[in-house]
Image (cartoon, rainbow, N blue to C red; front, side):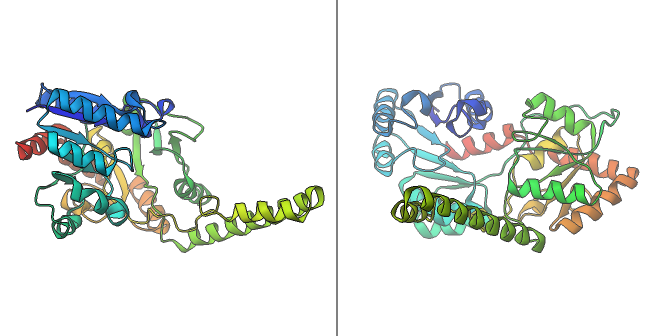
Length: 362
């Protein structure tokens, strides 16, 4: 089976962010299982500056290579609907929808009718795809790439977190620090900076408790208060800027700047669109690296892990604090869960995921 993987080469298409998961994991797995497959890196054909050239190059490439499938992991509008329709005349299109838990209505439902096959990580979206007329639906899930050897090493950290810094994660870390729980943080935006995959696995191995914090909006009342305080501060700063502009350039310029500041893309949103928790790769990566995991609850997670036996789940900051304190003091129970989580991870690797996906495509 010949597959053209039309993927982003870099994370979100930004070179400074490093290689994408599509390049380091998805393409690697597809190539190993289907050696005829060849890559088509979007950034090398105009993305994001030249959308027209990107569409033309992809159609020409597929026309020449005549693949059985063209495989996408679309984020937004990289590939136009008209291009998908044209590609379906040449080959069969398939897309891996990563975030259907919160993006189905705003994104997936618009693209899916123009695909031969859809892949989703959200079982609750399967009937929605059927309602759209999609009959070729593959249900899969995130996974871990590698399974490390299980061994006991000295712990260097009590509690750690690996992941990019954002408002939500910063709030969790600040709250824990305020309550006397220090968390060593790694990733873009934190003082320790980004780390390699090898270093990330070392951190999981050498940490008593690895936190898995998403970037979905929490339902904690304290977080809502923080958003309200930030919005009041933003409005105050905006008013002061407008008054300053008024004194220097007059009311017309001040009014124009004020109207400009009210554009939707300029306003701080108190309610980000990502407000649903979901399973992510980190749920499997932490135990695959022999780490003990405390993670936010998400629908479907209990299809893979048993709470309190193979993973520990929380929903609020108060629960998180209580769980951290408990498992820092109960080594035997924590280590038992750590081993059980490792056994779950051993059954949830990307190799098995893509064997199932490609098997369903044949």
